Image 1 (cartoon, helix red, strand yellow):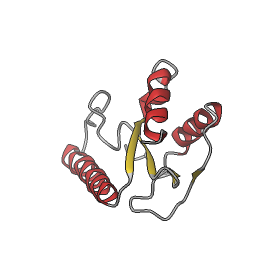
Image 2 (cartoon, helix red, strand yellow):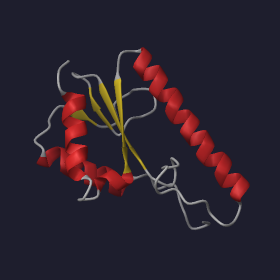
Image 3 (cartoon, rainbow, N blue to C red):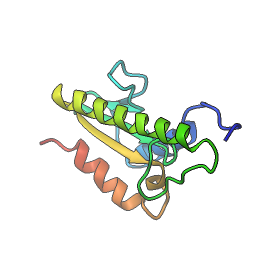
Image 4 (cartoon, rainbow, N blue to C red):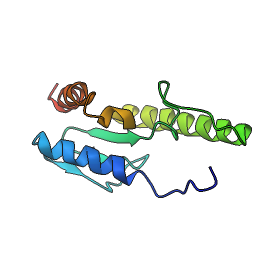
Length: 125
């Protein structure tokens, strides 16, 4: 784990970016000044889209506890999950939809369901 660095989640963001383009979705922005620093923001639809890594955000299906420094990593992931929930609550209170995409959802097998989630979140109410 010592070699894990905070380089961001660039590869997952790029995979989602390619999917958004393939779906023909437009109007998203990156680096939009919004609480929690969403990876993509659809301001017109008021949708904040986050891409969460399975390890860093404690994916219920794929998170595996490291064998060393378990107390540190357990606390780190718990703090990330708590922060994610606080951001979701704040944005929701301000009238935003929050969509979180797990890293594993960008796999080609899960893509059809993700496409449906994206369309539903971005459709007008």
